[in-house]
Amino acid sequence: MKQKIFKVIIGLLFLIFTLLVSGYFFYLWALNGYREKSIDFESELSDALAIFEYNQSQHDDLVKGCWYDSGDYVVFLPRNTESLVYLSLAYELAESEWAKRDLKIVIDQQLSCVDEMLSRNLKQFRDQASHGVHLPPSIAERIYPSPQYVFDEGEGGDVFLMLSLIYDHLGDDEKVAEYLSLSEGKDRTFSAHCCELGPLVLNESEWGALQALTGETDYIIEAETLWGAQFPSLLALEKGQHDLISNQLSFLDKDWQKTPWPFEYLGGNYDIAGFIALEKLYARSSGNPSYQALSDRLHDYLIGGNPYQFNFTQADYVYHPCYFFKVCQLPDTLINGVYKPGEVRIKPNWENSEVQLVGQAQYVLMKVLYENL
Image (cartoon, rainbow, N blue to C red; front, side, top):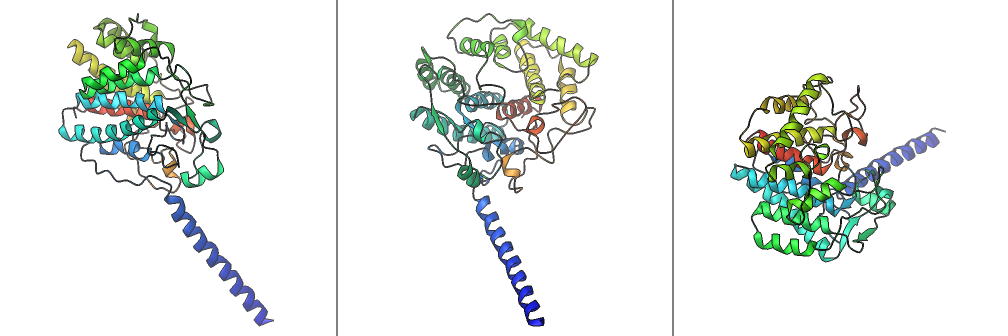
């Protein structure tokens, strides 16, 4: 009897040992699916730029290293180029050589991906079927489909026009002319089978403003289309229509004082960062710094001066795939914000905490302008 009990105990211990060893090797295998940190950033933007390194795709795609659009595994080329517009503008305006160096590293890495995707006529990897899946890439691609999508006939105009803006910010006139030529006769790009709220695509006002920013068309800016640092606002600055921006900032200033928290919606924090960047761009362009106090209040909201007393730039949990095994640390990453008024849920909830690269790029631009980097 004792011998039988002994054998059972030995068997259980062996089973536990086997499970532990197997779990450990599974853990190591899963970690191999994540992007490892390899860039030594040296400026004060280092923490804010880390997300762009970790968002380089580790899936077995035809093109490696392209940015995941946000806190999931969809790669959509127009969103990557939109992020690059703001990062390249930050590069153009940055005063610190260290900040310029770090920004250029991030920009060049992703431009390489953009070039290769365009050479293969690819616009997207994965779709709604894998949207929001946070298993490690090495596991996710074995469970969920990873389709690739090419540009539909006539698409790609937005990508080429954004690339012309990017190279304008980088000071490469030859590339500007090349991409303007490639954009001729092409329309916006729509995502394929993604996402929850409909296809990813520039709206009509953003598309019209983008075309006007690159000199392709004349576009009449409507005041109601202005919001944050989106393309219509950048166009208003480009055309010297400072009254439109001033009216927008004045409206926000009054609204902020009357209802202190008007950004409680999906992506609200990113629009706050965009407004701070816009105020700084407006002050530079018009010579009018009178909205500095508004920027200060908006900035204070982001770093804890809000009803929730929560620093949205220093969240303990950032909804991102590499947090599955705590592979990465993202200490200066701006999360989406408060999706439902009255509550802050810093848990795995994409509506509240998903990192969106276009918004994070605007946050980087905000930091360059607000902190004089």
